[in-house]
Amino acid sequence: MVKIEIILKDEQGKRLKQLRSREIEVGSYHLDEIEKSVEKLRREMLPELTRHLVEEGQRQFTPREKKEDGVKCNGNQPITTRDNSRSN
Image 1 (tube, helix red, strand yellow):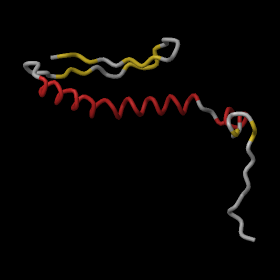
Image 2 (tube, one colour):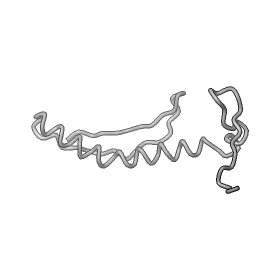
Image 3 (tube, helix red, strand yellow):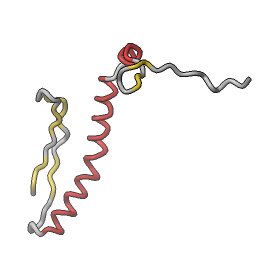
Image 4 (tube, one colour):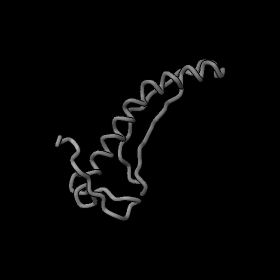
């Protein structure tokens, strides 16, 4: 058995979340057994990891920031849009 732990940290090393640790069976450490165990682990942990990263991204991106920054062309010039949904 091998114990796997995934700890998410931000750029400054601050711990954001630790996913539930899992143990995987690697059998006699033959490559095909290891690959099967890792694939099973990936299917189990990837949805949880993805969900947390999306939630964290959404938490950091607030409507206030979006409104202040607006949309900019090449990151410099503000862009204005027209409403093309109206028929003339």
